[in-house]
Length: 468
Image (cartoon, rainbow, N blue to C red; front, side, top):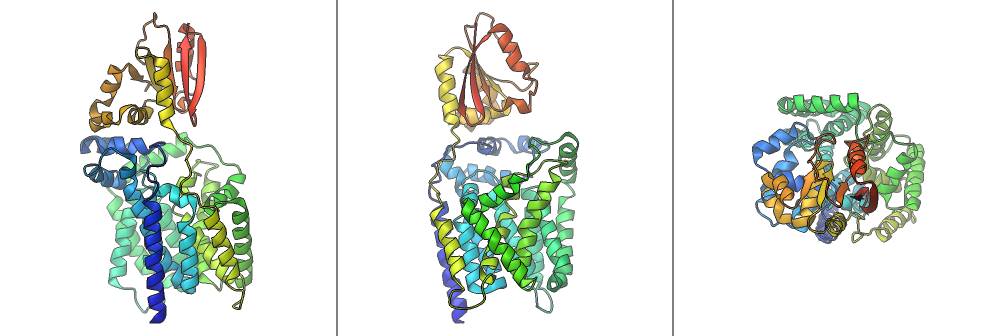
């Protein structure tokens, strides 16, 4: 009973700490990357949102949630990030329960603190994207899978909740199927978890059946990625270490955790279930996605967000198992958690500043010159930092921008006819190499306005001024 009260107290403190941290600094960073894209589509009519999802690399659940949220809050970056902050804060709850299940209060506390104080997880808690929700569902589904192990029969409530969790997983991100694959590996490869086979198969069937209406879209997106490639490049082996570094805050901590994991795994030889689950949950997806990327590049930090909590569990289990019980048993865990805390920088600037693109463009535009944006899907980002009120009626966004002499280049061979007498034309290049690898737009502009000035106004976003 005392232990139960202690766990409840620790969990309450951890939840409070997560909510305080993740609801702080919400407005430190500008709305950037794919966040304005989410806001833009969340404000569109539902029929247009469904039409967009046919070609989108994310399922609809998060977009629908944000569409509802967008009716309640102002056009402010901090407000739009609140749901992600809440999802990330809640994820510590099932992660603590998993840690306690495998190693008691100490393992639970260490796993929860590794999650709470890692910059990687904190970053996704402050993004208007689906990754924090994906993380929460991944951890919750794993807890639901393992919590009835050792019982004569799994409870009906666990079965129903696991089915719901898995359905939500695959409707939040396509890689939710990979998390279900992790569950399958745990059931197949760990002897004491084979009794969970029936529960897992029923939950899997629920996910498959629920996904049948969306399966053609999923298959189409996957087929295109395999046949035509993705926007990612084939990773180099160093990226495996870099990912561990991201999960650990700093190089010295990454190396320390890897060393502890190796020693604990060799010493325990499979006798510590938390190590086995952690390896299957984190290292197998890490290495597996790296290997697959030689055929269809998918190796990216955010795509591995479902595996990252598994590394927290793996690290906590290894720190608990690396030394035998005794006076100094707690020292490795205390040292690593202290290191994680000292390298935790929730206030840090992300380095993304789309507002600088707008300022540079306006300075060169001088009120009347034509501005081209390539690719056109950068328009929501540009519009947000130009005048976010433009997103209140996103259906007219392109027209509103045209009224300000800003035009979208959706096809490098077919864009607005520019006046030859213009003394300058501005081009906002938001990684146009992805959609215009031959750089035909720049070639056309340079043929008429051969003098070129350029500024990298934001990360990988250049502003060019073409003059006679």
